[in-house]
Image (cartoon, rainbow, N blue to C red; front, side, top):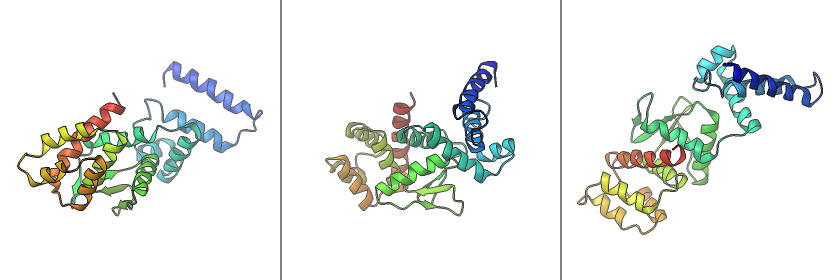
Length: 217
């Protein structure tokens, strides 16, 4: 940490430590404060759960718990921003984008991301499906496109532009899509009609770029 960050840590820590009276601050609160502060500094903000566990000499399970509790205690980004963080990895993938059996596989190490995605799926009466690795969520291109359009508040005009760029005019899928007058009708058709992964993936990635740019300019 640089000198400015160290001074900020000192000031905030003293404030926390004395707020309940000298030596009365629970260790859990101290741990949570230190974890939240460190993981928002350049030295630790981009580290994986595995890397943080090694750096702090605790288990990955404890890291996940601290991440979630820190978000609840000190505030977390809006659901749209959190989901945009996940979607951003689709267009700037590391590791590379993974699609298996017609579904996107999203790595969700951060429990806050997992929480927000599960909540979106629950609101839309869809179960959260995981691989044998409980941090890898499987989601259909249709559902992912719906998430991006709704959370990113994409307009039907923007969606039409995406469709025109990704689906040829003579393609049967485009005719079916064009018949939808509203966004809800559009998503109903996506859910009930068969569309190939080759048709849907470019639409998802194009919509993802618009969503991420609007949330993270």
